[in-house]
Image: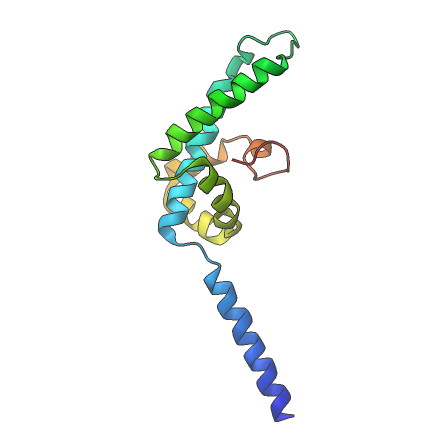
Length: 135
C-alpha cells in the first residue's frame, strides 16, 4: 500500500512539473502576442477591399505565387523587429499560444493590445478554426 502511494505521488509530481515547464515565459508571450497582432493587421490591410480581384475574379496561379512571395517578404520584415524569422514564428507560436492562461493574463494587463487582438479575424489567426495559415 505504501509503495502504491509513493508511485502515485511521484507520478503526480512528474505531471505537475512537466506542466510547469510547458508554460511560456512572459517575455515570449509579449513578443508573440505583439507579433500576432501586427501580422493580423498587416494581412487585413493587405487584402482589404479585394485589391485588383473584384467581382469574384480569382488570381491566376502566377499571381498567387507572387502574392505568396510578397506576403512572405513583408512577414519577414515585420517579424525581424521581434528578432524572429518566419520559420521560428511558425514553429514556436503554437506552443506559446497553447498557454492560454499566460496569453489571457498578458492581454488583461494591456487593454489596448487586447482590443487590437480581439479585433483580429478569428479564422485566420489560429484562434477559432483551422482555416488560414494560423499566423
